[in-house]
Image 1 (cartoon, rainbow, N blue to C red):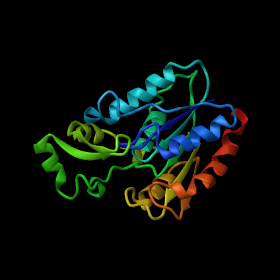
Image 2 (cartoon, rainbow, N blue to C red; image 1 turned 135 degrees about the vertical axis):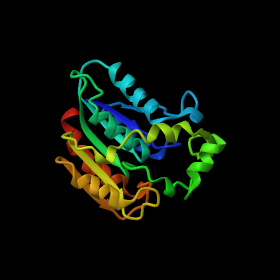
Image 3 (cartoon, rainbow, N blue to C red; image 1 turned 180 degrees about the vertical axis):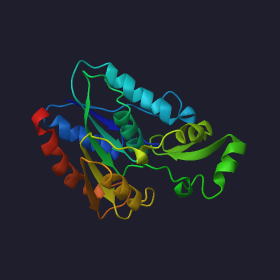
Image 4 (cartoon, rainbow, N blue to C red; image 1 turned 120 degrees about the vertical axis):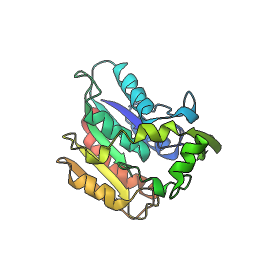
Length: 218
């Protein structure tokens, strides 16, 4: 099985969670693949571009099953990838692990946008976003919004087995939205945790739940 970590919005392959999962898998002799979604230029980031990067990365592999670990906004991308059957039959997405997945983009919860901020973003052409991977603010074009509203992962119904971990104190993703999404999935297991959006205090618990599912491949 091939393992992918899809890092969150304005993050990087060197994030805390990416390095955590890489270390856990390395202990079993397995490799974690982590595309950098900020490349080639964060300002031109779109959901479609991220989805294309996932597709391209999977297609480049020899035949085998694929597990996607999707964090936050890129949990959105992981769901779309599985729903659209983007991998070929020889490279099937057989497991989704979603960490505080932003399956519905609630723009009013984006501090960079805020209530009524979409029109301001449209007029300006871009907004400033703090990029945690770079450690500094970066611009994000309005094309991100225009592309994102074409997708609706919250409405998807997937047969793909999935484990979902959601913090009750999440300030970025509404827990009720994730609960509603999980209830609609025939093969989803949801863990509601006493944690915030980063889920950093729950990583050991998450791995204990994830490892048995992946054990046959490790």
